[in-house]
Length: 257
Image (cartoon, rainbow, N blue to C red; front, side, top):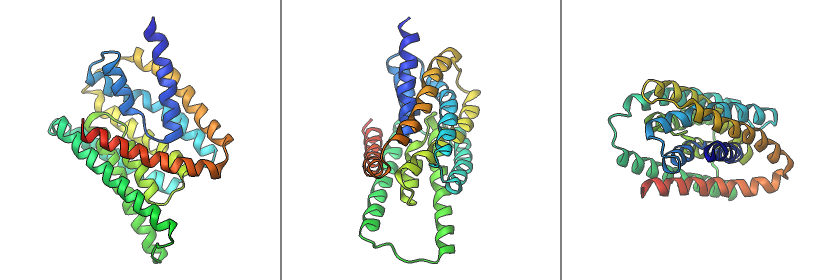
């Protein structure tokens, strides 16, 4: 009986986290299901992806209505992320878990460093003037690379891949609220592809999916509404360091796991 009460509450908190911080939540789902509910990693991974789909769908729609989605970067990252998810799924049996964690941790910490450098350059006005066409092309290439990286992370172990997506959008110069909304859209595409890729590998406990989805969809609806009520200037000041710290913490935890 406790499981029926606990899972929707967990889902609501993680759903709120997804739409409020754009962190994905896949790693949280997998960790909670394996550690506290003793679900096997294979079922936990596929279940987390299945649960993330309705959450990110609702969250992306809510953020789009609120004007927090950069469609150019979002669609580019979504397509490349879907491709990366397929690549990661095909390679999932060849990379040891420990090595994957360390590599992912290093990548996230390097992305966090790049985020910090970009922020400092922008703050001190040291951004070099470039031809608009060249800048647009360079940003598109970067968006493709960040999307691929996030998708590969998702395909390898069934996580959301939110770290590279959030870091990439910040590096590309998106405001914090736009980073959150766009990342949720990208994670929706990655979750769908990753789920389909893992469907033939890991079993899915549809009862777990249903219980989690009830909470996550409520959290996904509440997140954009709460963000809309806040003062945008103050929210930007808070969200930027929070997103940066989130990437650093995720990278550090994976490196030393």
